[in-house]
Image 1 (cartoon, one colour):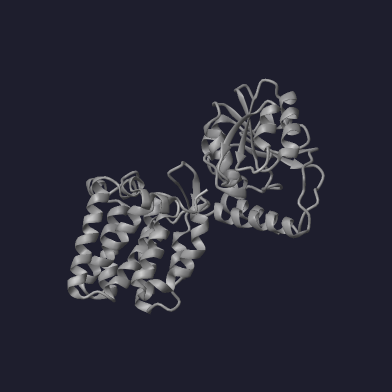
Image 2 (cartoon, helix red, strand yellow):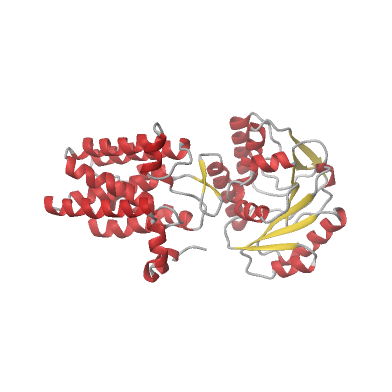
Length: 412
């Protein structure tokens, strides 16, 4: 490649190997800048990488795809060479020809039963038509065009699978090259199966809908899974929550840059306008009361306004569900299940999840409040909506010490 080269490595707790890997890469690519994204290592990985001559970007413990994404942002422009921290072998043949060149190991390394790899192959083939031999290989060379098309990467160990799909969909030339490489292979033990299980889950999530969060990370949208909860909730509430989740998902998938009621109304025909009309209609059909429907719709919007930082909307829902109970308590298990993934920036609720959970708090409220109480709730929720439109509810939380501490609880 004629362009400047950056060698990018994601490393976590690789103190014993990272120095040797960096030294070998410096010898092979003396003109390249070597950047190590330290993914929250608890050992001396960062110090060992610096001693070997790499530039280190220290990061919270998020995952491979997130570490590569954040480190890439700190890197100079040009072609990229991605490399695992424990690799042995020459990667220079990857630097000629294709926009995305993927290393296929000439000799099979020990591992599991191939379930994760077969699933990854099937995902790449189904979503792009490309027949991948090594869909999980982390040794990859990207031209500037491929870098533009593929970054930010999907999170975790799903980054390679989605990278191949994105490059093919962008019309770029993708190829695999067999190379005599070696790395530390996972065995058929507890840690090995756990690692491959994470690979499998991450690959599946990476191939679904994604969105960019406040940090610029590309995360899977899983909020529609809220509709799978509520086994003990009334049927009409479950139907309403499902419909609202679908309206939110449509906005997640096809919305433009507009934010807030005024922006959507000024634009005219947007998914945000469809949601602003559709959620009150669903709430009205579910509650058969204009007053109750107003509470539900406003609650759905307020919780969605809170969903601007990891875990914030889920914490608000869990606190609210403890107060209003009713049908909301039936959805607590699914919210608890999603919370650690949301807090660790592995997934996002998106509008689908936040609107649905907010509506649930509304359904719970109207089942407990008197008519006067419902009017007070409408006034309070309308006030919060106005504050969120004019400024930001998240900004208010971050400026209030107690709320700010609770808000940060559980994040990396």
